Length: 269
Ligand code: 1HE
Image (cartoon, rainbow, N blue to C red):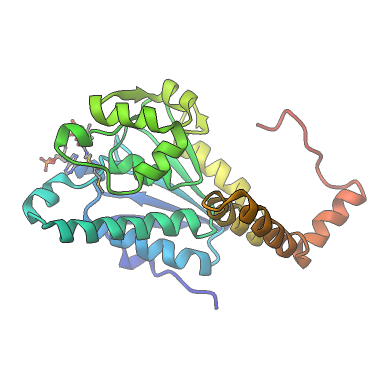
C-alpha cells in the first residue's frame, strides 16, 4: 500500500526528504518569483495526492529565491487568453491541489518569506502551519489586476483573518508586513531568523507524532469545521474512537503512566 514518490518527475518543484520522514517541497521558479503556472499546480496535485500513502510524515513547503510565491502566473494567463470555462477548470485544479494539502492528513508547514501574494497567499493558507520571517508580506492584488481570487481565498483567507479584512485587501491593495500579518493571524509564527529553519524544526516535531494522530489533526479538523456543530461533535467522537484506541499509542500512554514520558511545561515554545 505504501507508494514511492519518484522525485525526478518534478520540474517546477524541488523535492527532497530526510530520514525523519520530513519532505521538503520547494517552489522552484525563482526567476518567475515562483508564480503558479498550470504545470506547477499539476505537480502540487501529484505530490500531495501521493504523500498520504507514501510515508510522508510532514512537509515543509517553501519558495526558492527572495519570495515565497507571486500568485497566479499572470503572463501565462495573459498569453493563454482563456475562456470562462477554461479558467474555471484552472481554478478547479488549484482547488484539487490545495484540498489535497489541507485534507490529506499530512502536516504541511509553510515557510514564508518575501511576497506571499494573491494565489501565493491562497497556497500558504492551505498549509496547516505558517511561519513568517521578517521579510514576509501578504497582499491580494487581484482587484488591481482586474481579477478575482480563484484558489480558495474566499474560504481560507477569510477564515484566517475575517471577511472584512479580506475585502479591504482586495479593494484597496493593502499590504500587511510580517509583524502585523502574524499578529492578525496570517501566520502562527514570526521569527527573526530563517522561516525555513523554524518550519523544518516544527515539521520534525510533528513528524514524531503517530501518523494516525496527524492524519486526524490535519484532516478531521478541517472537515469538522464544515459541518454543523451537532454533526461535528458526532464525527469527532468517531474519529477519537479510532485514533485514541490505536495500538501504537499504548506505549506512549504507558510511558505517561509510569512517569517516564515528558511532561507539558511552559518552557517548550
Ligand atoms: C511573474 C509574476 C506573476 C513575477 N506571474 N510572472 N500576482 C501579483 O499580482 C503579483 C505580481 N508580481 C509582483 O508584484 C512582483 O513580481 C513581486 C513583488 C512578486 C516581485 O517583484 P520583483 O521586482 O522581485 O520581480 P519582477 O521584476 O516584478 O518580476 C521578475 C520576473 O518574475 C518577471 O519575469 P521576466 O521574465 O520579465 O524576468 C516577472 O514577469 C515574473 N513574475 N510575478 C508571472 N505573478 C487562482 S486566481 C489567483 C489570482 C492571483 O494570484 S492574482 C495575483 C497575481
